[in-house]
Image 1 (cartoon, rainbow, N blue to C red):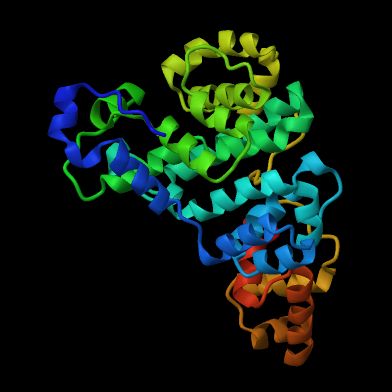
Image 2 (image 1 turned 90 degrees about the vertical axis):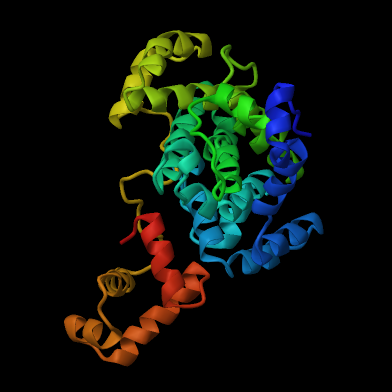
Length: 345
């Protein structure tokens, strides 16, 4: 439960935003969509993987999250179907991805409370997730997927607090101390509370809770996210983060040369889900099927695609039906969304 530690004067002045109100809002704002709720029910009921995959396929956003993580370099050979991706990721990681998918729109929104423009928090969260995954691969590769998820959701509490205060007249918040003065809690506690409500593992919850602590966490996943957050802030020119980065890296047992590589995009550590470089084409799609997808992605209609490829419109539609089946999607919009998100087009 969120703990209210604000001074009595602050609490009296802002009774509408006490710990209970924030907890209620957090649960409401992070509530799962119908698809995510359905997937969770199937997981809890130990349903067959095929049934879970079919439910996941109903949401392009969830499908993209699942395929992106399953096709990262952490897992070796690419997973070309949702069934294989779900088996590869495992139940605990899938729960984390479902939470990420449910809160995607919160993370991408503008946040006046933090003077943060639209997409800024989403980019920061993705950058931290990628860095945490790579750092954890240096320390203990078996925990790298959890580190990615912890990084992806570590600032979820900011999105919740920003949404909660969107219609009010609140001063801007610069740090955790400001949050605690204003709300009696902070974004790390809010995010951790939601993660526990979703039944995520202790390692991911600890990573979300401790990423702003001054001392290095003991848990491997929490340590990777803690260092990744410092690294990303340092890469943006944050003077305080730059100053503490060498000592932070040493405390985590990570060589500073690896961190320099991560900052310049040349670091090792197993690659990251959702890197800016395009991922490889899924193994089951043919060259012609990819040609069709890429032409459609430019805005061409099926008739125009047929003319450019020198085939009939019905042939283009046949290629598309094969693409839909292979990608476990229901139509062109979902196929193009997945292709763009995965970096195929």
